[in-house]
Length: 243
Image (tube, rainbow, N blue to C red):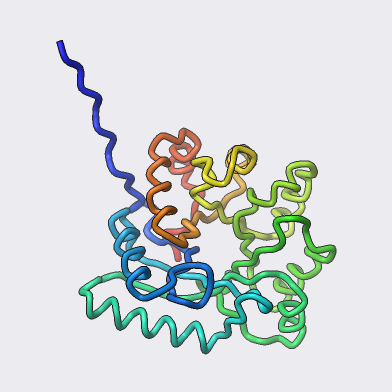
């Protein structure tokens, strides 16, 4: 007698409605290198069930010195290419801000930022050590009417040794954004374990693909076998559908 394994269903992320962290604008950061790559990534996200994309180019001044104008022009070009390809998908652009001296200077000067939706600003910081004045910078963001969204907190694995930092950031009013790939082990076991810990604490309010390339698209399929991902879906805590 022959036994045939059941083919696993394709991953369906339509319940999230919106992806709010990706790098799709071609040639301005470490994401899609050209328009063809951008369009393929967008088609892949559409196949996963997303109806809206908020792409978030890096603003890291010494590496990716992007500005609102650069991002706006890139977005316009990408939308035009999507229309030519017949891709029907809502696309907006915000930014992923790296907390550094340049960001702090702009904050002090009250330069307008590019929020994800309304007043939510996506920020990241060093994977090696947190800024000494992290909480003060986040407080300044709030004073100016923004809600800080901490990008992929599970990837700052040095914070696993002082988890109270997560508690402090949540108590201060920050939102946490999960990288979905973290639950697949893509970034390593330590990151996956920290993501699962934060999920158990019900600390995540948003989830993003942080999509850069086709490898990320392929790796997302492993979410289908993640029990933590299933529980997160059932929790109803994620705000993606409100964006």
